[in-house]
Image 1 (cartoon, rainbow, N blue to C red):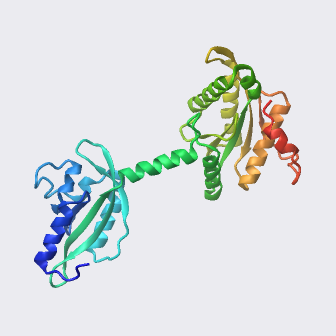
Image 2: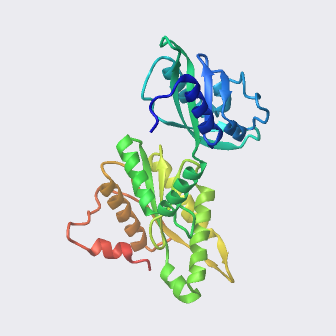
Length: 314
């Protein structure tokens, strides 16, 4: 690697690298106004050769990223070294959101005095798209588009660890196995999508809805009391029973049983209390909701009766 270059050689090397790269190289003054930039700045809608000159660095940054970019540039012109990469959404001329990684370093004259900063903006749109696709594949139920059991467990753990109070509702479609056997799996899939859509329509925007098993759904209801959670989940159960759904070529009633538990203590405790409430709802005739009760027996360690009951969907 070349280690010794004079000022003119270094400038020539910089221009060669900058001109041939998709990275945006920015030269700014102490206040953050752009003095020069590599041709790649055309990505942000600057057509003319000097159209970017005099534009402030933060004018390229979306509202949510302005603070972190300002801090990074400020640290550079303040003499900081070893700055970390940050990520932010840039503002393009057509108002399209485009994501970049950003890093800034101080520019010093012959006397070591800082007179500005050199910054690099590297597009990460492709990487973010791949990350989003990976997240979707790992944490989304492909049939209903809801989050899956893994995502549900992670979000429930987060609520417990952060101390966010709320409740959990568990739903199980009644006689789902019989629906599959009588009408076929395609119709069964339509039933699942129909119930998923009903949950989306009836729950609040802050509520988290997941499909956690074959015919089983779970909802996390942040910042709700047990009384509020009961009212919300009971409305879902009664509305579903009142609607005679058109599913594929068939029209029939779909019902669900539900159990509600307060999110507290631990993940296992919360799930166990919700499962027990759901089991009681099914045992009492289905198409109903049951709340957790402190006096109900817990599933004993090594006793798989509860597990068998919970898996039984008829």
